Structures are given as C-alpha cells and as structure tokens.
Length: 537
Image: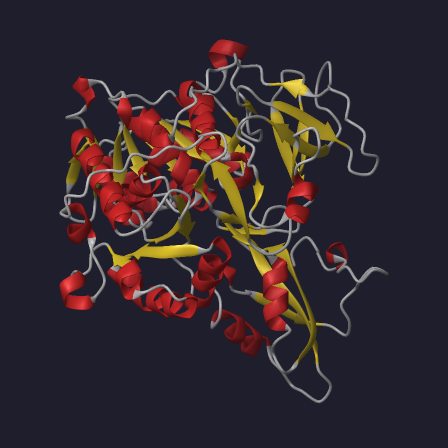
C-alpha cells in the first residue's frame, strides 16, 4: 500500500560515511577547496581535509576512544568542526552533536543520556562545557577545546595537540547497516528530547537519495550558515556538499550583513536556509546593495516556508527557490523539490506551498488519524489530509533507550509516523498542511512544550502550566505559557518570562504569558492544547 517515490531507485553502497566521501576520491579533486572559513579566511583542500580527519581519528583512538564510544561535539560551524565530526566517525565512534545555544544543564542532560565519554568544544563555549563536563564526570583531558591554548597550558587538548600527535588512523571494523554514526537529539512527535539513532547506512542512504536531486557539483560554492550540529546542516552540507566536491563557505553564525557579504565575495551558487532568513532576503533593503548574480538556488528547510514569501525571494533575487521536508528521524530529507523544480521530469515546476516529492527508495502513506485508514490517492487535485508516514533506508533505527517511543513512531511494517498532516496531489507532490505533533518550531529550532511545562511547575508561585505554539505579529511561531497562579501569589508575566529565560537556551524562551484559572485537560489528564490555541495567541 502507499505511494512510491516517482524518482528512479538509487544504489546505496554498503560503506561507512568516511569511505563513501573520501576513500575513492578522484585524484583531480584532492587539491580542490573543500572548506573556506569566513572567520579568518582559512582554506582547506580535500587533500588536507582527509589528512586532518585521519589524524583526528588517530588521536582520538590513541586517547582511548574505541569503536562504539560516544563523543559529544559542541561548537559553531568551522572547518575544525568538520574535521572533528568526520574524525569521530572515522574512528568508529558515534558523534552526538549538541546545540551551540545550550546551557550547561542542557549539555549535561544530553551527554548523560548519550553516555558520552568525551566532549569536544571551543573557547567561546568553554564555561558551559566545563560545567557540564564536571557534572557528568568527563575528565579535563577528555574535554577537548579545538581553539584552546593546549593541554600543556590548560589540561585541555586542542586541535593542534591532536593533529600533531602522529597517531595513525585506526583500523576499524563495523557493519554500516547497524553501527551508529550520529546521535542527534530530537523531540520527535512529542515530549522531551530523545537520542535519534542514525547508522552509517542511514546517512549514506540519504546522501544517495538527494544527490541527483540537489544537482551540486565541484564548481559550486555552497553557503554553510546552517548549523552543522543540526541534522539539516549535517547531511546536506557536511556530507552531501562534500560528496559533490563543492566548496563549503563556512559561517559560524547568521548575520545579515556578513551573509550578504559572503554571497557576493565568494560567488555563492547555493544557499541553504531556514524561513527566517527568507524574510530578510525578501524584505530587507540592504539586499539591494549586493551582487547576488552567482546565486542560482535557495533551498529552505527546517520549518514550513510560506509560498508568498518564497515567491518574493525568487523574484527579488532571480533564483530558483525550493523547499524540502524532513526530520532528524529521517536522516533528515524525505521530500524535496529537484534543482529545476520538477520541470524536466514532470513538465511543470512544483508549487512553493508543497515540499516536493518523496525522495528515491521511499514509500509514503497518508493515513486518516481518526480512522487509521489510508487516504485514497487522488486521480486529480489533492487528497484528503492525513498523517504522513514514510518508509525507506533513511528511517532511523529508533530512539536511544526508549523502546516505547520507538514503537509509537515506527510501526511493525517499518513506516515512520511523522506526526504531520499532509495531502498529496495526483503527481505525487506532498503538501504539509498542519502538525499533529505538539512540538513548537521557533525559527527552525524545536521547542518541546513538555520541557517548558516541567520547568514552569518548579516555580513556587505556579500551580499549573501549559505551553503551546502561537503566531506572533510577524507570522513566527512562538512559545506561549498559560499559567495558573498559586493562591495568594502575585506572579507577573515578566517574572515568568525571566524565570524560564534564566534556565533554557534562548530559542526556548517563553515569549508570551497568560494567566488563567485552570488548565483544560482530558479525563486522562492530558492537556487539551487545542482549547488553548487561538489564531493570534
């Protein structure tokens, strides 16, 4: 049952991520530029990148990192992030990438759950990294500070210490189909963050699934402002762009002026963004001051892109704007528009309110959540809405240590239940229309309501609380807290906002507060979020 991807099936090699990307690299590609750091201007060729990855793997192995060990990676984008990430995988270890905005408790929570034995970070994030490392028992020599002063001066090894160690890359033996490459954290369809178990095969498969559709090549310069710690940046940039032998122009963070400077100076051809960047590209007057003529493709992901906004970007910059859909549990890309928008294969460009077609080697189902029955595939127009299910080689193996959550997300037939309501048209284009899941997406970042609710309930003046996503005046989804005060207290909205802000990453902050007499709940005690939502919040 279900409907298959309309694209031809692709071959998925049974190899590790390192072997796919680097083992059989053509000699003519070795001296191409792989990475350009906008912060400092350093350039790294593919030859240098491979040497550094092997050196990093050797140093990690010499320091006791073995096949199957978990290494935390907490850093903004840089060429050293790429070296550390691929060095971890080359050593046969598993990388758990950590959001660079996380507080020390957030970091410690992920390190503990992932059972990480080593943490790699940078100087700017060292205070919270040290606090987290102390809390989970990671020794100073297992806290690596890539740009730090070095082990002799601080007790923390730096990149130079590792890359100059001379230890050879280890000979590792594992099954790519079952061995975990990465362990990003996602809230899935609901609840608190969970470790998403992605094997080497999962990542290799997703690269194969999107390679021809993205149409990147060695002449392209790809803007790498999407964070590498996020599965979108990890797969599309750190993996797929390098596989294409393109040059990754790496930005450590988004700043509009620097972003536009980079596109102009480096003649960027592909920009991978999230919707908030599209707003600036469509509306900000600064854009008109720059030469963007090399830019051919802008692909938006991580959150839904409004069709009107996407069209405005396309017209202003004279580029092809594309949209895709995915989630960490899908490695992450499950749907995408090809580089030509679908013109060659389907005779027309996909509308921007769709997320394109299912990637090769996958099967989709759209299921009525009320009846559990599959929605009929249309002969014309659009189907009725239903939950989108996806089956394919990019589906995660499960959530780390959480069989219950895994079983509720992946069924016995191998379909992953995305938690998103979707429709499909008669040529297989998928349209995401709503979310069944309760997850809030703020500027592309995942904000689990349950986590904020649990935090709010620790406040002495809070009797009960619920958090939902509402739309602000700019059309952005933001977290809003509904709070029941304890009798006799005079808690204010500003105090609630300040309380939460002091304990979570910036993107998780509560941005609106409303005091109510009682939180609506079902007979089983489940919060009735739909009763709290309104069009404007």
